[in-house]
Length: 167
Image 1 (cartoon, helix red, strand yellow):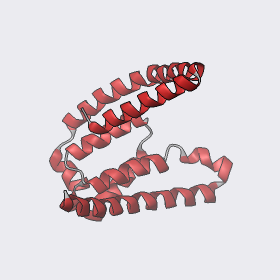
Image 2: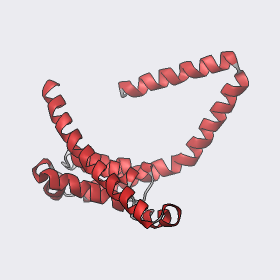
Image 3: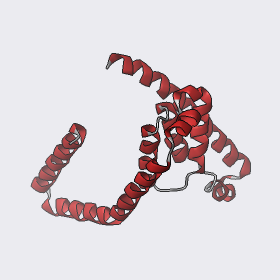
Image 4: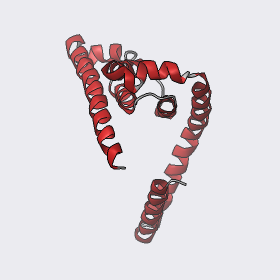
């Protein structure tokens, strides 16, 4: 089991013990709320894991490495950001897909650009912004978000390579 998960579980358990000691009704309500969120997200998590497993079988590592790998350089990071802006799925689908890309030899920077772009940009959501913000504002926000995704991927790629030398 992942040590980080164990520490988060211990901290959460400790938080519930403290909450129960201070206000048992609040702790019970928090537990009910958590179970409700689990019931709502569990089907998404299960289906997404199966989808990620299927996608990982379809991804050809050579193709992923060519388009998103370290050898692709900046173009791979830009391509990762472009793929992210096309995404419309939930985080339960996107994160397993991102892990599948990593397993298929995508560079860490391209995967960071992919997930960051997915969070900040979306071609499908862009038209919904127009009536609220206006077309110029929405387009500039979208463009800046895409640039941030690429810059984040480049920065992560550099930091990851530096950090990897010290491990």
